[in-house]
Length: 358
Image 1 (tube, helix red, strand yellow):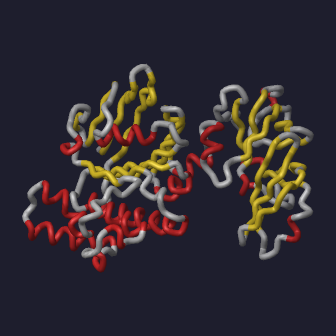
Image 2 (image 1 turned 135 degrees about the vertical axis):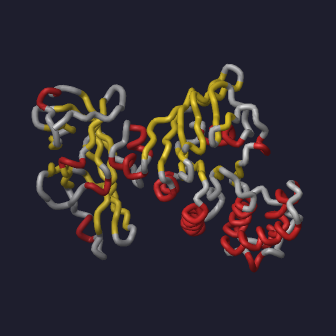
Image 3 (image 1 turned 180 degrees about the vertical axis):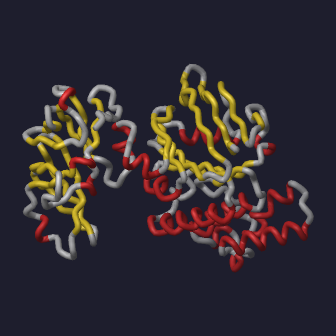
């Protein structure tokens, strides 16, 4: 059963259309992440699901019920905001209980519910504290707790971790994932951070300029991006993209020929973009691979691995290499080896992925 279904959803502000007829189905208990650059329409889409933005055209249903004209309070959704939106004069328990009191839930049920959710989120020692006395991560857990106590059909997250430092973001990602596995509530999560998207999502929706570019599991999108935008957005660092032209046996990129799996002979002369993931290259020849000459600019050590910033012709490239505890051997790298089965091809004009067949 679908938890949330968007069919031909359009959002316009006067003559300015910012979401262009998107279609998306979020299954019951699924965790879907909307990701994309600033201004791509992901937060607007989330706010339309919540009822905070009016839908210009199309249909929104939640568990089979059409929600276009239903007030936010009647949609049975709970939203966690980027800025926490806590009441500063109320303690943790009262912040979490506020919505339940509005719904006139009996006091004993409220206390039981707050105690249960506080235990789940590790907030029991902080129930008497006010938000000003909490860390950023604790405040975010309170905001999540306020959503959980309502037992909604759908959780909506609007960039909830963007105000946290890097260490807290990593901790909270894990907590959100564990929480979803425990509660199993249909969830839609918005972020501009592709690492959050990859680590949290059952499926990722990549948006750009008010349109959906691709939908799939994290590894589907990582391994088989639909176009150059998705290829350049997912991955850290993102996929290297080089202008090339197909030959009878591969792709000519500058003064190097890259071997390609599949039949390219019938496509010789076609302009393409050659995509190579930074982590897919090796420094020594392994099996069916091509040597790509590079001019090394910078070695950026990260511990167990290093980033090699380099150039090939006019293309700026980044590759990953194992350090084995020492980076001295990396300063002399003059070429990397590219396994033919991991090379991706995109049409130079449209940017769409090419599958030339075996």
